[in-house]
Structures are given as structure tokens and as C-alpha cells.
Amino acid sequence: MFQDPASSRAFVYWRTRVNSHHTGFRAMELTDDCTNVRRESDHQLFQTANREAPAVFHARGQYYLWASGTAGWSPTTTHLYTADSPLGAFNRSGLNNSRGWLVGWDPPPIPEPGQHGNRRADGQPGEWAFGSQSTFILPNPLFDEVLHPTLAPFIYMADRWTPDDLYSMGTYVWLPLWIDPKNASRVRVEWHDSWRLDNATSPFLRAVTAGV
Image 1 (cartoon, rainbow, N blue to C red):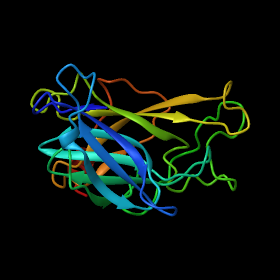
Image 2 (spheres, rainbow, N blue to C red):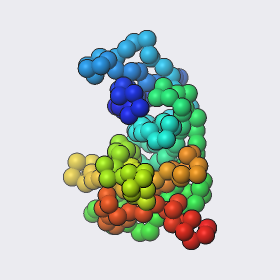
Image 3 (cartoon, rainbow, N blue to C red):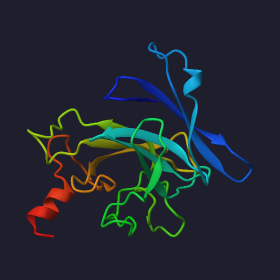
């Protein structure tokens, strides 16, 4: 579910079968009390290879749909789509990554809870979202574009699954998420062993300060 901060309307998003080899995403607007859907709003956002785990968020007039691939309980790459309205059409912006743009994730070693967690068999995180799968992207309540522009405007919230022990070894990943103020299609998440809502600094602003 997603509530549009611009209109206060609520929407539901889901993965649907298009044919035996591809899936797509659909969305519908909810009624005012969020107990039913407005059937006339049923809309296919896009048709593409398997995607799941949608997380929708809004910033500066853009709507973002973050999704992962599908591989059972195993990790997959992540994908970012953008649109001008909650019902699309959504266009693929690229892979969400942590260092550079469209070059893949390259996080430092992360503490694994017990077993190897949601990682590729060879141990290389690649574009595997720090061993996690998106579940929600939450606005940071402390972010203010005027008073606190360097803080992360969003929190990337995700599950980390251990395929061999789904019940006792399922954990969570919460990381700061930024959007490049000069390029709205660039979304970046950075690994932090620990962080607070009021102290993570935008990597885009750090780059400007360093003259990069």
C-alpha cells in the first residue's frame, strides 16, 4: 500500500501474471476508508520480466517504485521505476546502487546473522541490495528540505532471509536512502553498521563539498 502525500489518496500495488514467462505490476486506488478498491482505477503499470516486493515512495513530484527480481528465497537484483503519477506509466530508471551509478553495489563486509543470509553463493553482494529484499520505504520524520537537507529523506526497510532457516534467521535491514537533488532518477542507499535518523549525511552533498 502507498498513500500519496500530494493527494492523500491510497493505492495498492501487486504483482500479476501476464503469461507463463513474464509478470507485470498492477495498481488500484483504494476507497476513502481503505476497505475496498475503486475498480475503474485498475491499471497495469508495466509488463516486464519477473518483479516482486514493490515499495512505492514520492519525492519532488516523482513517484518511485522499487522492486526486486524473483528467485524464491534467494537474493536477486533490485530495480527502480519512476512515474509522474501513482498509476504510472512507470519507466525503468535503472539499478539502485550504493557506489556510483549503474555500476553495481560494492558494500563493505556486513555482519551476517548466524548463517550466510540472503547472499549469492559466491559471497559477492553484487547488486543484491546488501543481502535484503525491499518491504517498505518510509519517509524520515526528521528530514526537512530547508532545515535539515543533508539528512536521508527516506528509510530503506527490507527483509533479509536465510533460506535454510526462514523462521529463526529472518532479520531486517534499515538503511538511509537518498535522491540526488540534481537528478531525480538517481536513488542511492549506503551501508551503515549503525546510524540515526538525525545523523546520516547525503552522499550527493558530500560529493559537492568535495568538488566531485
